[in-house]
Length: 266
Image (cartoon, rainbow, N blue to C red; front, side):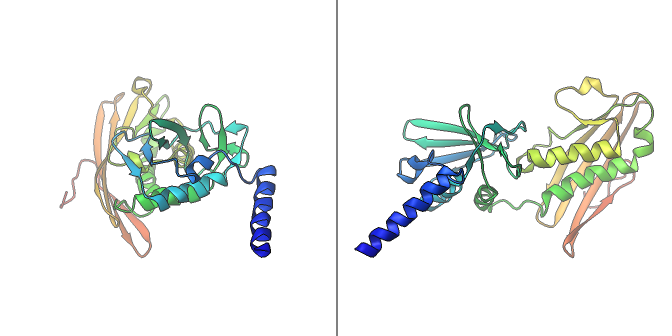
């Protein structure tokens, strides 16, 4: 009995110390106390994509990650990737979550009153729940690289003077669920490096002379097909490119058609 008491006391002291120095928090103890009957995770970009976590072990995994979150004074300025709804009967707590964010001192799991810096373990918990979806391998590579390949091919035309280029991926509904704010920020930098006058369209199409629209046409873990249209409204030129990615030898091989030449099998 003495040994057990010392052991329990020791764990409590350690946990108290971690809370004191900011490596733990006690704001999510209500989850540990079995007051939560379900957690709904909703994609902020694809309103039709949400999943419900009711399994006790999965809820506990989420709790273990959240309680290790460091309380922060500042929250990220990036748009949330997911909305968490933590249900306790009739009561619901809402949190925004930005995946893959790794900035010291900046919160990526937050509500109006509190902010926490959460590790990537929460991303892994979400991905485990997405295991039923056969998304492309290395989605962030094949998706954004496909667009950059077309931009590179059209670079001389698109960088002409007074040509403002807008890239529209907001309507690519089959892929919205896989887009994350951190990766989008990196993509913005890459398109600006490739075509200095290019920007992602955000309800501002009228500001651009050339509109590049991306529309996925099917994918699995090893094949990725998408169409990319280039609408040069200034010179009245409209072209469609057919992009196909094949995953071989642990990398994506990307092939881009000539303008308006649809490959066989499309």
